[in-house]
Structure formats: structure tokens, C-alpha cells
Image (tube, one colour):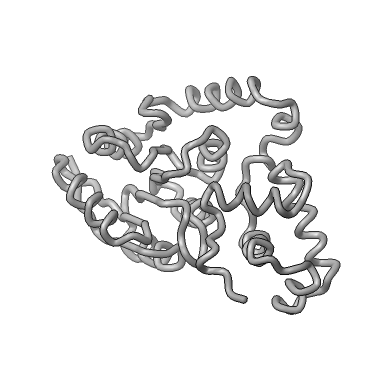
Length: 230
């Protein structure tokens, strides 16, 4: 059996080292690289061609869901495990729609994490430590969506797509307290363009105003206050 090549993506070096120590105790698993931000993660993924990527969501430069979507568009055979402290059903939907094969909280046990890596390499999906086929996970999504508000079923293909890089950038500036006019000046785009992006953001996140959108994104690690530039 070939060895499983794993790339770890997280901005905390102690956590990365801990994960490395854990998964390398598993049989036939090699950590081939580590990345601390989204840009480096994509570069290493393209260079190293790992079998599995362990992906945090709350990353500098580009959040993990956007990195997942970009990597999967170029390397569809690479399996991505979203490993994050933001554990809620909506985030699971976003991760799966972005192309992840598994979603695990960061307090996952070492044994479960190793089993998840092995499962996704074999073509399975893992959510809540439950191993599922593609058909199973599609049924799981439909079942969960059906239990939620009707607005979730209006356009599910669009609803579960993470924000675009530009939308994320604008939302980061919103969290720093900038007005649409200030954001437009900062980014060198028109005021109307910023308003159009904000309209799309509110629609995608199903919130009523920019404050709710900022809180939503912060709680899920899509934007980082410490990386917003005034």
C-alpha cells in the first residue's frame, strides 16, 4: 500500500507540530509539508501534490474555505479535511460545498483524526466521525437542509458557496468600521461597486445588515480582525 502524503495548513505553529506528531504515529502516513497561510498553502499543494490536506478555516491572506475551493478546482483528486474550532452545521455545509471531504473539530481525538485521513483517501466523506459515501453525504445535506428554514432551499448551490476573495476583503474592512465610501477609496473601486458587493454578501449570508454579516464571518473564521489594515 502506498503511503499517504499529508499537508498541514494552520497558522499556529504549536498546533501544526502537535498534529504532525499525532498523525505520524499512524501507519503509512507522511507529513510532506506545513503552511501558515492560504497563499503558501496553495503553493505547497501545487508543488507537493499531497494526498490529503488538513485545512484550518481561519487563515491569514485567504480563508481556508476559499483555499479549499481553489485547490480542488486544480487538483480534484486531493482530499481536504477541514479541521477547525468553528463547529456548526452551516459551516459544515460551506466546507462540503467548497470541496472538502471531511469536517472535524480541533478537539478530535488522535485516533479519529487518523481514521478520517485514511477514510477520505479511500474516497469516503466524514462528518461528525461518521464515514459516508458520496450518496450518503448528499442525503445527509438534504436532510439537514430540510430541517432548517425555507430560505436555505431557495438556491442551495449558491447558498453554500463561500464568499469570493473580493467579498471577503470588503467584509474585513467592514469589521474594522469602515464605511462603503471609505472601502471604495481604499480599494480603488467605485462606491456603487462596494454597494453591489455588500448586497451579494448579505444575500449569501442571509443577514439583514453589514454588522450581522461581519459577526457571521468573524464567528466562522472567514475574516480576521488582526489582519485588517486601516
